[in-house]
Every structure is written in C-alpha cells, then in structure tokens.
Amino acid sequence: MATRHRGRVAAAGAVLTACLLITGCGGGGDDDRGGGGGQKPPTGKENTANGFKIGLLLPESKTTRYEVFDRPLIQEKLRELCSKCQVLYQNADQDPAKQQSQAEAMLTQGVKVLILDPVDAKAAGAIVNNAVSQNVPVVSYDRLAEGPISYYVSYDNRKVGQVQGQALLDALSKGGDPKRGQIVMLNGSPTDPNAADFKAGAHSVLDGKVNIGQEYDTPDWSPDRAQQQMEQAVTALGREKIIGVYAANDGIAGGAIAAMKGGGFPSPLPPVTGQDAELAGVQRIVAGEQYMTVYKAIKPEAEIAASMAVAAATGQQYTGRPTQQRNNGTLEVPSVLLDPVPVTRDNIEETVIEDRFYTRDQVCSGAFAEACDEAGIS
Image (cartoon, rainbow, N blue to C red; front, side):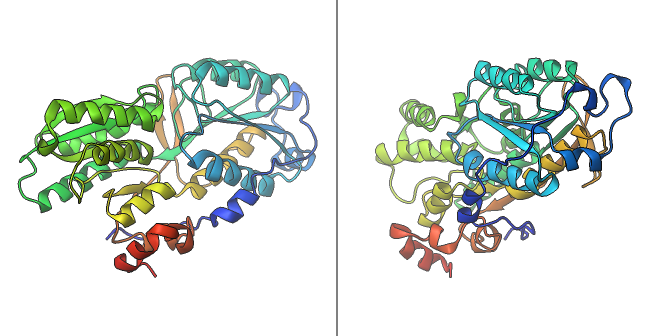
C-alpha cells in the first residue's frame, strides 16, 4: 500500500465554484515590472497592494484535470496572494500556434507574469523569449518549456514512469513469468516533454524484464487514437498473446480498455496502467478494468506555481519549498519537483478520497456502488 499523500485537495464541487476569474484592477506599465531594465524591483507589498495582471496559459481540455482542478486552484491561490490581481486565462486546445497567439494577446494586455503549461515545449520557447524581451517573467507549469524561464514546478516525471512501470511489472509477476507474453506500450504525446520522461522512466523498469510487442506514441494524448493503436496491436500480436498494457495516462488507458473490450478480451482484462487519477480512471480501477493510476495531488503544484508567479512578478525570490536545478536546454531552472503516488484498488480510500480529491459518492456513484462495496470503500 502506498504512503499516504498529505496534501489536501478541495472537493470537486468547491473547486468548480472557484473557477470564476479573479477580478481586480489592471496592471501597471513596463516601468514597474520586477527586475526590468536594470531598475530596482519594487517590493512585493507595493505590487500586490496595487494589483496587476497575471496570464495563465493551459494546454488542453481533453484531460479533465486542467479545467476541473488546475485552473481554479491556481486562481484561488492567486486571489489569496494578491486580492487585487486580475487573471487572464486561455486554454490552447492542444494547438501550439493558438497558444502563441494567446500569449501575445496577454502581453499586449499588460500582464506582468505568465504561468505557462506549454502544448509543445520547443515551440513554447518563442513565447518565453517574447515575454522575457518585454521584462515579463515566465513560470513553467507541469511541463518544462524551453527558453529563459524563471521557475518550474511539476512532478518528478521520470519517477512517474518508474512508478507505472513497476506497478505493471508487479502485476505481471503475480501471474507468473512476466515474459510469458507480450505487453503493449501506449506512450503520451510526442510534443509533450513530460511524455518523454514518463516513457524513459517506464523503460528503465521494464526493459529486459518484459517482452514489448508493440509500442506507440499517442498524438495529443488522444483516447481515440489510443484505442486505434491498441486495436492495431491486437491485430499484430493476437489477443491471446497480450498480458499487459503500459498506458501513459488515464485517457489513453480508457482507449486501450475500450479496444480490448470491443476485441473480445475475457474478464479480467490484462493489467493497464494510467496517470492523473481522473474520475473515470479511478472508477475503472474500482470496477477491476484498470489496474492502477498515478495520483499527482494538483493543489500543491497549483499553489506553488501561483507563489512563484507572484514572486517573479514582484522582483522577489520564491522562498517556498526547496528547489533543485532542472536544465531545459537553455539554462538551469530553479524547480520544485513533487513525488507521485501510485493508486490501486487497495488504496483508493487512503489517497484520492482521504485527500478529498473526490468524495466517496463521486467514485461510487451508480453502477460503481456495488464494486465499491466489494473493494471495502466505505
């Protein structure tokens, strides 16, 4: 059983209430941006008292976490740190060009800092360089953008892949020789730098210990593409040869499971990994269709990003959690990397429910009530 995660995340209903944009007065001119032009940066007290504009750029909405959790939690923390600040928010819908246009519009509107979760890390370098050229610092959120960013906060993404890979290896080993058949690897989007880390972490555990029959990168983290890829793998390998699936997140896991159920796989299905602790993924785990997910408590990540942004905008140093250096291809970036938690049917109650990420009623609604009772989720 995984160590209990100590972060406490507000219930989803309360989170959705916080989705309203923070209102307040507009930002000042370029002359009061912290650190700009060699001028002495103003104090945080002066800036937060007056209020300023903060840009928040998130990458997509196919993964439910961004609109349901990340956005409102970041906004809630920014409201706490700077009650008169105004948040300008945009979602790029997995389009790098759209995200660049959104960033340019925010700079035109006078934001004093950007919180950027890039669609494409390399393409995001143009956003970062443009912002920094206008003395607007950038905090890279969840995914590490290229360019001279000020701070980065995420989870230890290589460790995420290792946790997924180890969980799959453990599940396969319970059934005998983990090389008795083939596994399918469905990795994340090739434009997402985190996906490469997840993939590398999983391979570091699985290589040499399992037979990888087919492996795919899944564009845009699309569940539909994952379902198609899994169908191709079944055709190539044969249903009876597949003993496990590495799926990089819960959306991809859902696509793989749909393909297996549609392809006539007997129950129980081969073990399937996941990530993000999406409600649908957690419910599949309760029902015995998905083996595990990775829980990354979003509240501490969101709150750290907000604190970094206010510090950067006001010319201060972030002084929250200890930082380490992470190279983004441009420079060594002060970074906070949090630890992921594996979730299986055995510890749903001690993780996502105890942390109030979801309530029991949400997880155990409708058709999942009986499965929850069988799993002892009270």
